[in-house]
Length: 229
Image: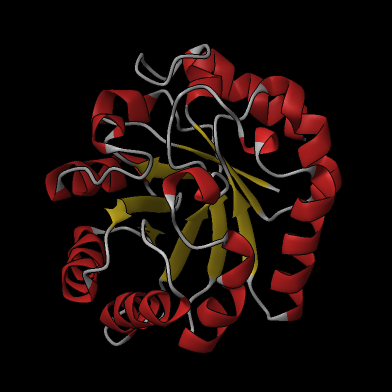
């Protein structure tokens, strides 16, 4: 299981270097808020061989906008390009997933496309995470992810229980996909996450001392890595 940490700046990225994957986002612009391309590029420069992920936003149903953002993130140096589906409907989700995957894979087949849906889909009116895996696999993307859409302190586990998340991981494995889980995760969730065993867990608030609006702390990233190992 790999730890993905989400800094919002180059300075924060320096505190995140012990993580497995450095994920560039802009928390003030949403759960998967997109940062500037020059921040992605700058963080990639300091990360060296360590993979860098870039969120491109909690996207409404705008396939062209999402595809262009994904293309830009790939060109800026991101190894993982992550899009959130902030809308409902399988047909619409299929169109956005295919557009984003094509935008990245046509030029950068080695890069990873991450498609995220939200554990709190019922309260925000978006597609269920359990519906996206076949669409992700068919499009040729790489990772199906669950996050929380509203960052109000309620965690992934307040919306989906361990059994449901194990089922999500299993269906992804059957389809040849990796799984990423995120959503206001806490240190005390790590034992359950080990049992669920996704390939990637994504954190920010956990390594900011509990408040995602503050800054990533290197000692908390190291603590999380130690607990996972």
